[in-house]
Image (cartoon, rainbow, N blue to C red; front, side, top):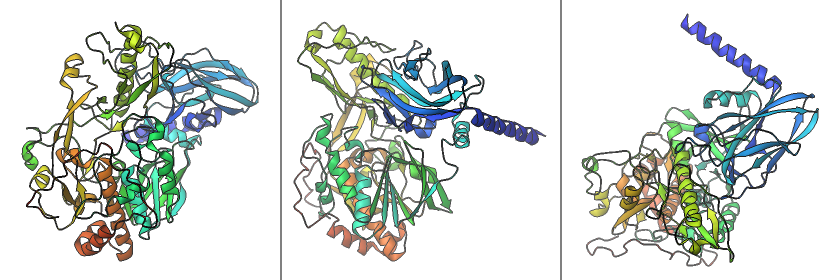
Length: 626
């Protein structure tokens, strides 16, 4: 009887969706042909159901985003938007992200985005419309990161799309905002998900050794944390023993100027794009995010990717895949074994680990800087639950890696809140310096020149491989027959800044670190493939390490070498018809030969662009031979 009732309820909901689709018009804002000053933000689409548009104006209203709607018949229509008051975790007051909907150039009555404590449908008002084309726009009122996921236009005020993510996904497909099934994207030898430094090198390395490769990147710009969207420079060293050819590929697209939180041009996005688009055998797919996998037993058979603007879905098939997403999204969807947080000291015998295991991770950074305008400038009053004073304000004109949030939150499920807190403290602190600080004259001519809205993440899930790299391996220089990429960075483990904790207990936004030097250490290849998903590689910060060792492996130059090795191993999988584990078990000499050769171009002179703030400890112990 209970099952019968549930079936009736489900049928009733489905019928209501059909009715709604017949009556209403559903608009995905990320699909608007004119974005104006609004930006597409896809970082949290797995959690809240979709990319959305964000009005990231750093306190100055951005230009309208707009589209044209075909109204089927004349009448009175009700307009809803799906939005969220992003400061609601810290204050019950109306938030700063306010915007309006404009119809035919006229603002509707409702102010949106500044109320509500979760993603949901907010009422913009009703309007009388003629049949035919109708101009619709999102009009930002503040420049403070108002956000809009979708617009619903319907003659019946009581018909509103569902709130929960699963039902809304079904609704989107019903009304045609998402396709019923993905397009066939074809077969590849190797599919790489994640277009950061590690993913770029994995894809190009495999292509150069004969693979047909697809590289999927969920942003318009490749490079991950090294892109102009996040602006973290490349750290650690490449071209180290025992395989000095590894990493040389990075010279082909690495930046020629150092520093974090610098002007966009310093990160040379155009070189990264040209590096990918010019590679024979590589299909580069920017603006696509992996959203589902299809399994064949313990193997990934195919992956579904979705365009973050159009919603188009594509099915990619391959015998081997690589997870270079950082968050281990592909592995997680496939059911790969993973870990997250800090292991206890006794679990792997690590002196740098905490006595007991916990969920703490290194945090995410919203970097920023100000510029001198040469004349006085203003900044709005901004206080939404976090109060700055003479004693606790940060008396600075820029913030880089030390502005780090979310160490005590979940870097996956709390990530929007983590990013938003980064924005909140930047704006709140700057507002105090501009408007209330006793020495505000020092800031009178300065304005915010850049604030990241794509957060730079350091740590989340780590996929477990046949070997888990631990502190003891590095400290004792444990030899492994499958030694591959070389660690050169310190054990660099971030923790909340004690002074910041004292001022903002439980709401820290600054970090400190202690650099524990290491000798260069060649890590085993077995850290680069999943122990339970037979055809899954990984490269980047989601490889098989402990939290402690992640402090050394997470640097991007090190990730570049991982990517090269994974690409080489993928080519062996193709040539020998084997698996990632099979490369270790049966074809390790072949992999060593490729690592000695390297994947860098030899037909051009490669610049020395690898010397900026590399850090680490390059003195080799006398009793170790590489």
